[in-house]
Image 1: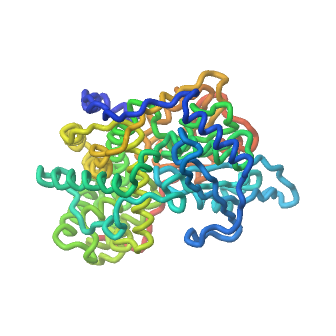
Image 2: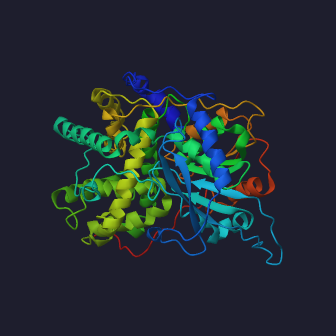
Image 3: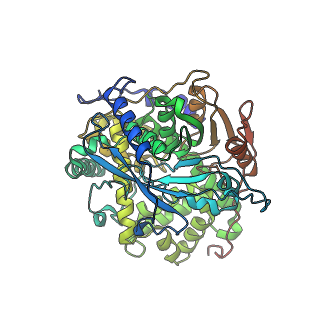
Length: 533
């Protein structure tokens, strides 16, 4: 809904023409393409080889109950006999034990393969959800399978810069950046794109969503699954949508949780504009919640006063960074997480309250510099995110387009807009060929019924994306968590949502029509912070 509001409020904002696609733009590969043939070859080989599961890589620090193996996939599906890369896969076998009746054995339903999004996030930890009460019934019936997508460590990891240089703190976070600051950040983005090209070499062009979907097909075959049961969250929903378009007859069940719009015109530049708009709404939700709990945090009894408190903290950090590392940008990054997950609300409000009362430590703990290991993981994740999104689609190649669109947008959505620009701006200077996004559409009967889950006020993946996917996948059904905004709702605290998820995965039942669930309870405030003096 907020995406639709953006179009009406902005007029021609999002309708400004993108710069022409680079000359190296790559058209979609059709059913008879070399890539389609290469995928079929790779899948046959993977089915014959299978996966030899054993101990997981030590660096992943996974418990012994989870076993890991690798699947070999072509770097370039047009050349299946060429260079190959190894994808790491994790699995926890189904328990086959009914959590409500320990004496009842639950029949197995195969593997449930999960992608957590990003792009650039690892799913190797997914099988751990089997230990969470909300997932035990699903874990009884399914082998829970996660994997690290191509580029994500330890699966042929990408890197664009030294991890030690990735976190530059403290940094400013102007909501009205000067021309000089814009030039500085544009130069950084161009340098980052150049470094990605130099470090990635010719392989860089092969890290994109279409290849991620082909990898999913090869992993399915390696698992010995005739058809795929898949759950994708956030970017994982776009990956799942591409798989559904490319391999509809290989789908058994699909769950799309927190949906990215698959509209080719949205991928990815306009999706990010919509996201910035939606984060402003979610930021308002957070401020209103803090104001309701002014007796706990002392940050103001109105959203405007909470905003003033935040801006005061930002100004103080600009003058004197907390712990030498936390400046306005680190503050904004920490509070951006509150836009994703309302579980963060009490912690962020407590840290802001403590900082303004003279205790910076909670804020340093939540927003400060990461460990060397954490920095390496974050740099890798950012490199994959950038490569996939930049490779996936045409982007404006003239900074004036970015500047015009986002200057207009920032007038009413200042919280996230410019940070989102700096994150994605390397795509303006990207040196690898761009893919043309697929027009995802399935006809009635082409795809089994699929389940779409969405929170109505999700900022990271605005609700319009779920409506768009629902329109494009015939037979899909949308379950909405009303008046809620946590990013990803499957297996969370909402029993209604989980009931629909379990009915679909365990009983092959899906609502006859789109339906909704009441929102989860708002978080309870932490009461360790005294009111501000």
